[in-house]
Image (cartoon, rainbow, N blue to C red; front, side):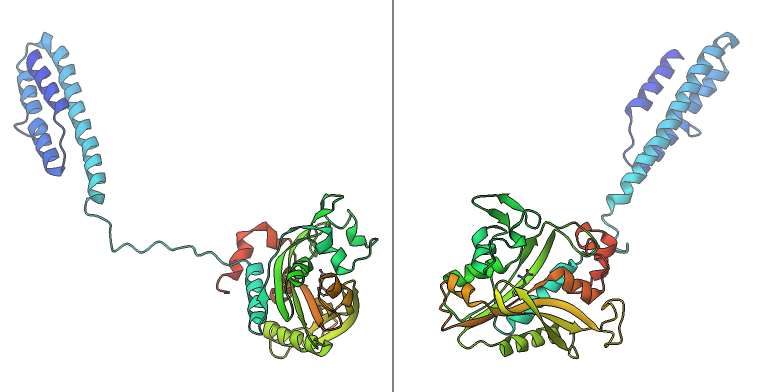
Length: 338
Ligand code: PHE
């Protein structure tokens, strides 16, 4: 008896069914009506009572081992079967999560497209600049507040190396090495030493434009800006120019566009009917001279705007910080916008 149980246990351990058919055969071999274990229990019944306790325990152990092995192997085989026929083509597809463009990228592209259509090229330049390209060539007097550490991020002093505060620096670079006609826009990141709030940030994006040629007049500036405002904000948009001051333009102005509320007044336009959009003016002859362009022969206009501000007005965004936080709930709202 001892030997028979040992052989049966050995067989139960070494035989491993690979599929459902083999597993069923294994079950019949051991537990079926004429199976090994069934046979052993028949023998067990004929044993003298003093041996029953010993062999009864051994037989029960063997039986539970076999039962355990059958259910465990069954689990493994059915898990394997699930994949054995290849992928299930009837399963519904998993939904793809498409990203969306950032509102700044959307508006930047839109503005670039508008000016490209009337012959403006795109120029880019360094974010780390010297004093000359950001201030001196642009007619900033030595005591101008923008030259102060309070307003501008300096990397070194004497020589003054700094993060550009506007992309007018790119236009200086273009003027220095191009003979007019020049028609270009410079999009890019700019930096100002300002406290971060809902309305202002120390990093933002600008697009500035420059047109230099013979006989460029203020009327050309106004026409160009009017075309731009209508393309960007809609055909019914009206513009108005208010006098302003910049060291590098003379005369200088600020352009407002009519608000979507149609002049009735709303929260966005602070009940004025107008939204301030950009700064502009005729390039100061001193600036042309500094950039080796003959101010007797050539005139030009320039303008500059903050992309964050334009996007704020276009989409009625309430807080400029949202642009930088990458909150997916904010960004998702722009999916579907090209
Ligand atoms: N450079 C100005 C600014 O950063 C904008 C501007 C550009 C104004 C060109 C007039 C002409 O605010």
